Image (cartoon, rainbow, N blue to C red; front, top):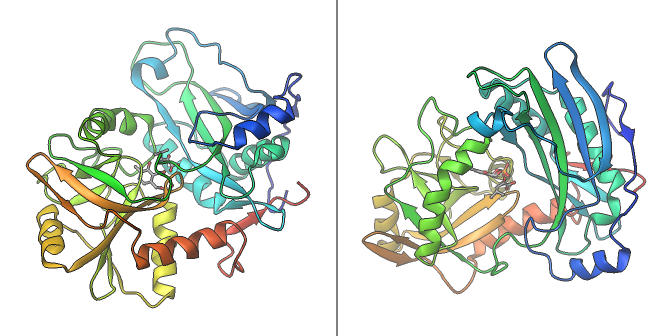
Length: 367
Ligand code: PLP
Ligand code: COI
């Protein structure tokens, strides 16, 4: 392992019944998102008395959980999303994994969970990817990694758990949206908000996603792929999608994205795209953007493109936008030129096709 100084010793117990190669390769032919899983998982346990201990890589299996485990009652749970890629020249790489490790601890602090040293987070992820290296698809696919942590103590009082499980699972994935790289349709949630100032919107805790599901169901019922949330106070300012940040491209080539004000998740894709866009000479503004302005800008032709971005979704053009009293179309036929250029700039770094001048790619040597 490269810069890893984890002091944990992982007990690696290989899966005695891994998926046969032919079956795995057959499954790779038609990858969706998050339905197929690799042979192993990583686990590290924590208790108030012992700290982090019992690090293992073992066959992926169910957790035995007491019905009083506090996560089942009070949702003390956080997660991350990151990907391992197989480059065209055969290397295995991770994209900015240190950013995920850091954000995971931001989430842990907000949810009163114990922080996991970044080196231990990275060691668990890397050990799992090494063990399941043959699960990294080549070509367009990638191995989606899901580190997560939850309160496992059996206790019904409402206070931070004194026992916690950290785990990582891995899922070979293709496109997040069923339509692949086609523009997606977005539903604007006017009734439900995702996050409020002082809440948990700027961290990755399970409850944020639970709170978004009814709005996501409304999106599906209205023929849309994803939901975009407005701010909690005025229901006016565009914040982000259920699982992605959002960008707007104007006719003068400038780009606008909502600022991180405490209720928006600080996406690693968002941060990377801001940097790449600026390097391409584009003017990027992190400033509030109102939903009524969005409608007006589409009508006047000032807004040319919009896209959503995140680890799972990568960069997805927004084709049309629907809300309770109307809809408008941005471009349902194809991804716009700025969206396409930024997507290519990002994915060529992630997939090792471009020289990584930013130092964003961590190679896992020897697998
Ligand atoms: N916003 C939300 C609510 C998310 O769940 C995600 C995905 O992790 C993002 C934005 C994008 O973040 P990232 O680019 O770090 O994956
Ligand atoms: C990710 O992009 O990693 C997420 O966690 C978002 C979710 C839509 C899968």
